[in-house]
Length: 210
Length: 206
Ligand code: HEM
Ligand code: FES
Image 1 (tube, protein in one colour):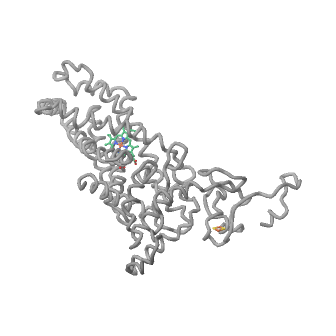
Image 2: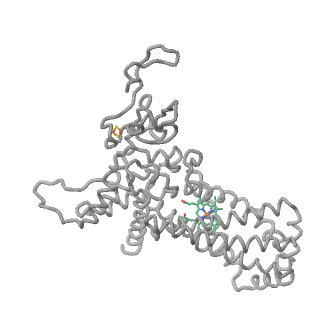
Image 3: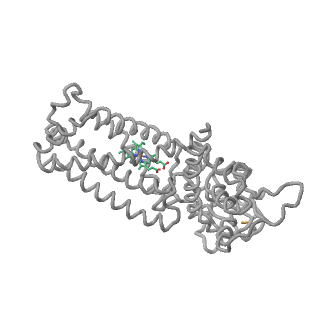
């Protein structure tokens, strides 16, 4: 930030400030993901005195660059829409309270709900690239979250259908870099495997039960 | 089945075909070839027995050629959607992901070469070929011998690591502990099949 106040080029001339995204500065908004010394991480928690100098900053490579270090993550929001990552409660009358959740389920769901859509899991995934339409780990894990919610579950089959389409779950190659890159330590590979199990059951149900 | 689901079923069929029948056949193939350690006569007797199996040609086509062609061609297509990044993400599983694809590509070339030189050669009077001699002569070449070693180890690695990812794809191993336990199964398959395969190929050079 100090650098941004008085931006200079390598040979000391004044220039326009570097563009980058940030809001919370405490690793909850998800907007500041970039590659710091080649590692995809949140810039706000990459403390300068723990980094090798000189620090090299690069924008995430899996999203279109808006300018400098700022990227456009719309593709992730499109994926969230595609898998219906919400609880359906819209209507014209009060639906009343939903069913209760077991404490253990709630605690686990809370971990999954920590996703900040930063895009680091997509950045490190070898299957997310210009040759494939894979949606990456984050939206898959959101299906694991909303399909265990007592009311969210009402869309469970539609979410699994969405995961079974092109660019969905089956593009995953189990390289498991995502779970290492997640700044919120979300068990992404467990979510993915859970969805593999759920789509297996769903697929057979549709094949033999319809 | 809707059009959208074809993706799902293709991937599951690819995954399944890697184990049944291809993986099963690979294990059987390495096992039967171990007979080479008992000499040429025993080996050729084993080969004749297999050739006399009822419906042998249909079994060869239905259990080996068709599944392998599907798995291999679709596997190349899947490999084409990958951009490996092992230099920037140096994790064991990421290496395994890379090696699964690399060994797949090696296998594609090796299997064509292997089929061409052992099965399609003299296809008319294949039943009277002295396969032990044929293998002995071809393995005289250091290069062919090396290609066989690489091919066998690629196959055993690819199957062993494939068992690990197959278990995830079909929903058998979900949590990290289950997945870690599966590594032991995978490692055992790799070591046992590699031992059998390498000993057999050495027997042709003895
Ligand atoms: C000896 C022959 C072969 C055997 C026994 C075999 C076996 C397997 C098995 C068991 C799997 C795991 C399935 C899964 O991850 O769901 C697999 C995956 C794979 N195989 Fe093969 N395979 C063979 C040949 C080939 C060939 C010739 C290719 C061509 C490139 C190939 C490419 C692949 C790829 C790319 C995967 C990963 C699929 C994924 O993770 O999405 N395989 N194979
Ligand atoms: S600024 Fe919000 S996560 Fe870094």
